[in-house]
Length: 513
Image (cartoon, rainbow, N blue to C red; front, side, top):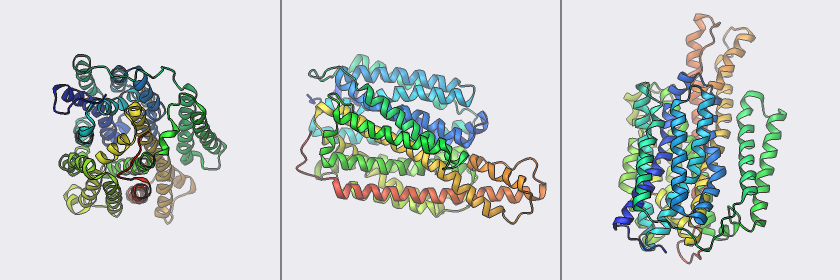
């Protein structure tokens, strides 16, 4: 029974442990975006390697997070939460010591397994423990603090990358995770559903894991071998069929990891559709903005991280207040206006072309980041409250797992699809830029092949000195062209998220399932 008061000692310990553990997982994603240029140089990684580095973690998270939520409901939320933190700490340590890009990708898989058990545990612990009247405020506090820490990730990542210490992005998780484990062990009681059995939906887990992996593989292979290659279309078709099979398995299973009856609630369905579209736009937009600032606009990695500070300040000021408004008046209006405003911010950012660096930040990138941050600040807490408020306590872990899974799946698809699109946009723009250069076909092919490295494209060694400066400028212009296209698509996803809220989400008379 959820009866712990937010201001009580136990309530504060629950919030502290949930926030610390969640922050570990979330900070990795945003900080990693900023250190990618340094990491790419240090480990001699290609553009495709970078997308696999991001997706290795997200794939495991997306495919196992539903099991993590279900296990918490069945075996005990604190126990599964702590198990996830331990695995995440081990994976983070392995990432920090990784000698090459392949080992780093494998270590990110271990992080993803830990995150799958850890992330839904934080929200389900709050939802099943904190008194219902204060739950919106508690979730708002969780959203605000974790988002502030998350958006502080780029500043930390930038500072460490500029100092040549990008590996400490992973090592920093160890003391945070250990502190959270001590709090959970000593100060937080176990919570479980006594009427639940412990059977796990392994067929569903295998279907979604393989389906997502095949879809991601197919999209990431497009820039290298083309859409018509058998590897691409067979992977995409097989992945799609496995996701359809996953839905059929869930519909027939006696103990599904994703109970489809939850989607009979229009608010739950609408909030999850909003989550998918908005976070796909958020993930791709922030990734390409970070790469653009460092690789095309001449920002240092610390300066790139500092550009997100307005976002952080807005979250500190607004997110908890927005959670309270959702408690009082309902989430619907906030979930229409918030994503639409975020989409407008991404659209504004898409119009920024080549600048003279950080000196022009306030008149170039700042307006878009401000509008985007304002939209997200009014969205995050009401969205989480809408999801968790539309289900009974019995399904709190599962609901949290589903919503978090959709966030990660959105990021997987955004990284895979937009990563492939960005390379294609870059290559197309580059061909237009160099078509008038008097180079032989072989040299032009070598120049164009660098498109796979996106903003880290280097002029091939055999190119004559006279053309090198022109090609360097062409690389920057082509990358900015690709960035603009990606940001506009991301903005469209934000607007689509607002439409989902308008169509599906309701403030009152919501029947919990």
